[in-house]
Length: 309
Image (cartoon, rainbow, N blue to C red; front, side):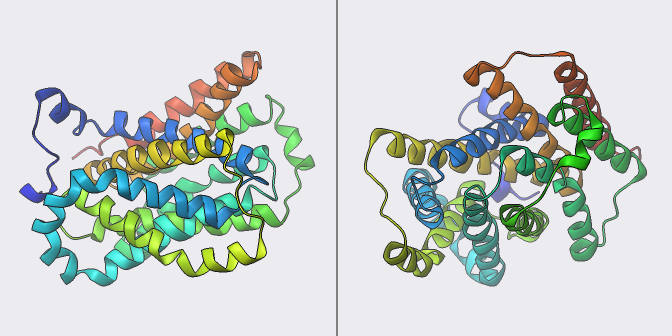
């Protein structure tokens, strides 16, 4: 790994944090769980392209002062791989999040959480297609173990409830979003060797800019966002936590352990979502929560372990 990939060396504690992939990916999952909740709350109040554009524009403004000196230094490397950087911006920033917010206007929470659990399998397919990297037997077992834990939680311990689940337009949109994000997750390993702040600043800004044509269309076809406290807080949250913080942590985590070993942390997102429902919505924890959490954590541990040499 080149010096340009290193995070800023300001304090020992910061250096320790940026080299802890499991903690970084856990922070990512926590932020993205909150994004799903806020996105569902915003549905019907903020149009999907508007929310996505405001999210990434504000995130770009937040990160730019910290990233500017790194962008100046890394610009020749970015320009040399401009095509890859543009594709990463369009897929992981512009398309995925817009489709996610659009899907949340048409589907229920249970469906999106179930579908998100397919993330590691989608990443495995893209890893094979783009990098020729196969999912190991241990990784496959870990993915299936954690997926079982997610199903236990979401179906309240009754796996027969799978037969009663129906999928709609929003589910199909969300599947498309997951396929796109799986592609982004693997393609980040082909990014130029630049500083993490340079990477997120460029992709945030470029991804937001790519949404402008869709934003213009949406402004003429959908109601404008009301400038009330709830909407402004929603925009602030999605710009700071699931965008700025989560993408810094996710990109660094993938850089440290690879896409296949990082992908099982997708399963932690619905686990954190269930915890948030208990804390913020007053739901009471039950036995199936404990069993499911244990299975998810066991699966993530198995799938993300360093392969034996």
